[in-house]
Length: 361
Image 1 (spheres, helix red, strand yellow):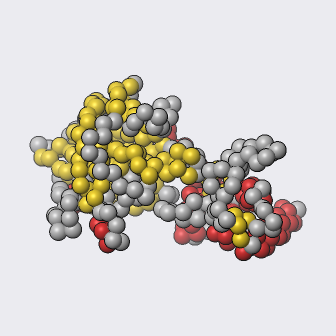
Image 2: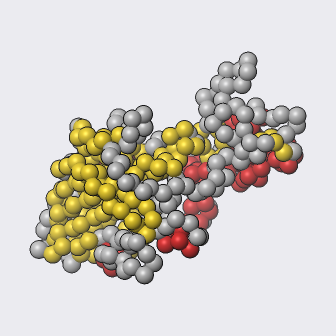
Image 3: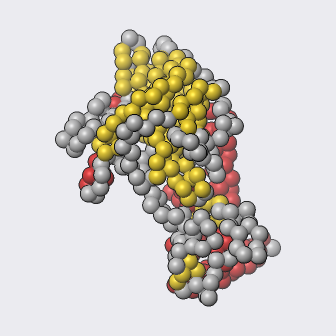
């Protein structure tokens, strides 16, 4: 259920790592099984006193994590339907997969895609806004307006149909509690209908490039291999599960940043940075220098620690680092606080590499 303006299945960084834009807000799932209909979603409309309708969470039997991938299990009579959501590393691509794990007969799944195109801090009041929703191979292309980045809703199988109907006045309860505008509109842009046999899966891909991998099994295998590599890089296979979870969680804050070209310098496509925190923040100088040892050195990501230091070193001005990095060369006003932390972090990084080299000897 949407309770915040920051909630969504695909919030894309259109100017990586910034320019975060809500594209796919949610999927409303309706299941027909054994001649019974089940709505697995919930919405709240207009005001806090409004009921949650439909209360699809009543069918949620279990939730757990597989690495960083959330898994919901829904109990629908004698059937068990699993839902997974994960992202492709360093891409504006989200996968939503449904697997009929247990059943005695086929299950019909009907999905409604609710989309948007707004800054992650904003709200949409659609009025007469009309997006272009165009059928393409394996799904739909959405152009929010002329010049907007197109995005895609694709599937490995099933029947996809385009639509254009605004669902108005979603009530965002947490935004109301913050004293902010609590109402948001989302566009019902299309649907997917598929029949799943016991043991079968279907995957929906939300992305800004139509060249993504559609095979959900292969895409999930790649995600699991990526996380296995992170744990291997950590170098402590006997670490307890909670430590391994922290190693995986650290990855979401390390981002690629093409360093903007300064006068007389070439742009560096290998730049790295850190996001100070979700949902609000970009890459801030002080936060990055404080977090760098824990997110990179403690997790075995020494090369990326060096890349981050080199990225920020290019922005040093009169001994000061910027408070934050922006899309251009000139960033937020400078301060010497993160510069001092940066020097301590650089020494820590050098000492860490030295100790690591001695252990390897």
